[in-house]
Image (cartoon, rainbow, N blue to C red; front, side):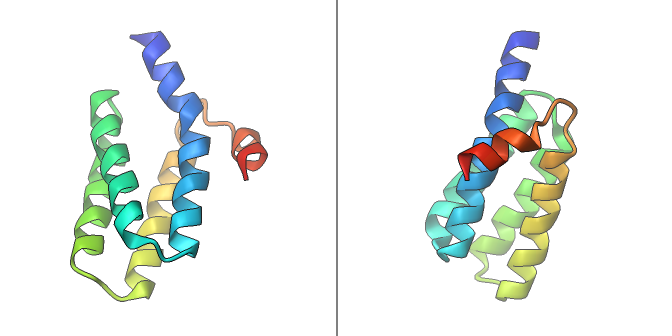
Length: 96
């Protein structure tokens, strides 16, 4: 299971870059899908807080909330993902 968790963490920077791009493009339909994937995967790998924050953002996106609310919750999710032990910001920058 450690290998699977390490692979999940290694993919997080790429997912962050992808989600940031979707938000910048205001592609909320695809962003909802990406957030939903993070929500499910986070829980599956034991990152319950990531799942909780992603679930909140997912609900917010479904409700067509104001852009400020989406941005605030999005930033919270990204900050939480970046705080995961083993997250390598340099990998995020190399995918940008």
